[in-house]
Length: 215
Image (cartoon, rainbow, N blue to C red):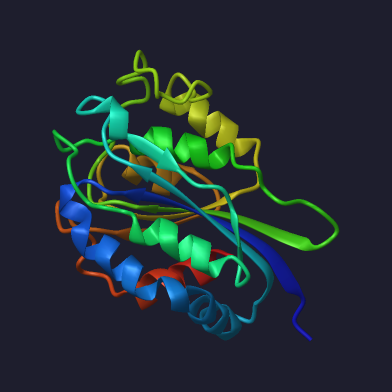
């Protein structure tokens, strides 16, 4: 019998203007996400017991600090599916300014999540969805909304990753910094995306399959 995992997933979603295709698909698929993930995990010989999901939506601190980063609490599925659906449906793709976005800040916020621990087998997974590169950490640091615990550099973030037990699924273009993270960080799965295409090249099911593979 396959032992079930207690799974936490944090979605770091680029919600700048070009990302409307995947944002719309997430809205359409939010209610079926758990079922799809369970089926995909089963195909990989894995089972999901307790599932919690959380969102970190980001744009660009250089463009507009006021809407550069939004985050939710964890929602336990399926009991809090309606609340999770509400948060997903409130996502609106827009803004972003120049092409690099504040993805590294969003990743840092995701890593500081209140992960579940206990006697169950746990899996902690961060899923980054973006069609853009990312600014170096620190761009926009003077903004009031900038995360106070964000590392000073990518090297510091990488060091924090080495000390932790999360896993990472990157659906991101093979550009700085994502290509380096995909090559150098342990327990990382990379689905290369096309810059500026809103992840339009991927069906939601393909992303769910990548998440299941990372469990």
